[in-house]
Image 1 (cartoon, rainbow, N blue to C red):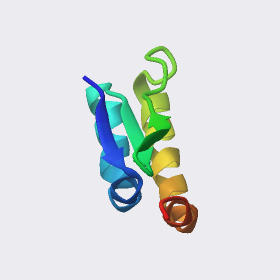
Image 2: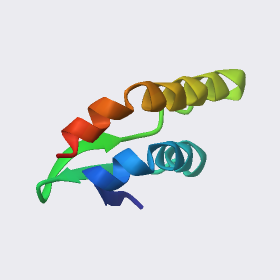
Image 3: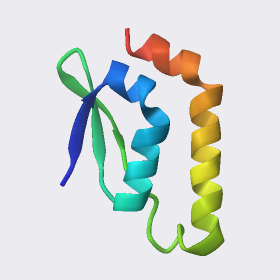
Length: 76
């Protein structure tokens, strides 16, 4: 079942949301100004098996930290 979060919540909770998308295989729609803005979706199951899945999640979480300022600006 897809989840919906505000852009500010996505920015503040991105690592948690990314982990949930990955582990629970769910989609999260990010809302900005009461309209759908972006969707966070899991990587194809074939691409995320085994060590590759961990590698992708680690890269995803690293990018979230690196681009936190960008996410903050987008949520305004």
